[in-house]
Amino acid sequence: MKPKVVVIDGKKCILMEDGATLQDYNEVIIQRMLEENENRVVESAKKLGISKNTIYRIREQNKGLLNG
Image (cartoon, rainbow, N blue to C red; front, top):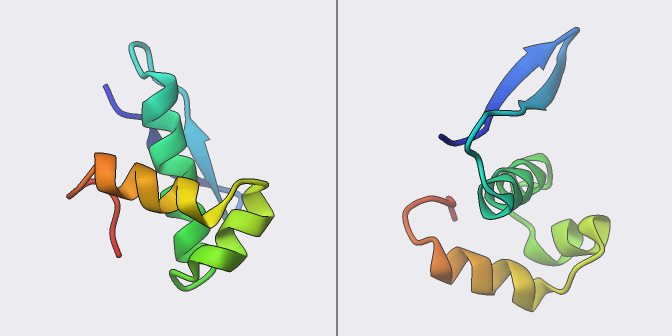
């Protein structure tokens, strides 16, 4: 089961789900950061404290799951 993004008090939050994996959460977190930064990979990577290559690698591994 994939984590869900919900809005609480005007803020988007990730809802923890039974059976969701760390990979599932990583996908949601990266997607949210990309959305917040208008799909700017370098800026998103800096804010997450990861390399841009990590975002590209995760996108490649999860084609169709992450937009962009």
